[in-house]
Image (cartoon, rainbow over all chains, first blue to last red; front, side, top):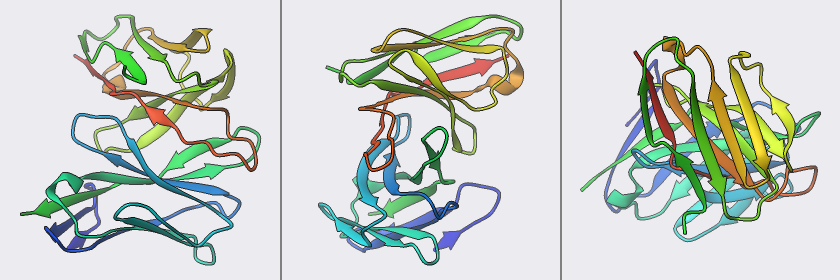
Length: 113
Length: 117
């Protein structure tokens, strides 16, 4: 199940199940979104991105969905594997005086064998 | 052939000391960044340099001073270290600064784990 609180939100799934990680972003002017995966002891690693003129993009076993109406982003991982266990971050590219990526809180995905 | 590398990987030091973290990227990117990740995994940008020029400074204390000797290197010097500086510091780089319509995929280094005692 999913829990949100003072600690890092966690999602536990069984190996082979599909996983959905959700993210709410803040700025309606953001034009580009990225999902990153961070394994324990490592730096964030690019997974997939999507521009604001799209609502869906697919990669290998991953799909990103963008709903601009409610400022919501989701990452779907098909047939989740133990190697998918990590913390997942969404990031939005905020345009303005200084373009920058703003990261969401992160969601810890645990895949049980 | 590490794309973005940082040294040291671990740094344990006493309060009040001055320390530096180094970052190098061999991707030919124009833009480099420093991020701080706290104990709750929250990742926040501190600085960004584009072609050796500072373009983002996110209200970071003056004790933190980035230096970019060339576009492949971005170092972070921290004066008078405090307990609250304990965190993981990540360097990242991107092709360019991500102006409107252009992608800004950032590639991260492995992180420097700083512990201030």
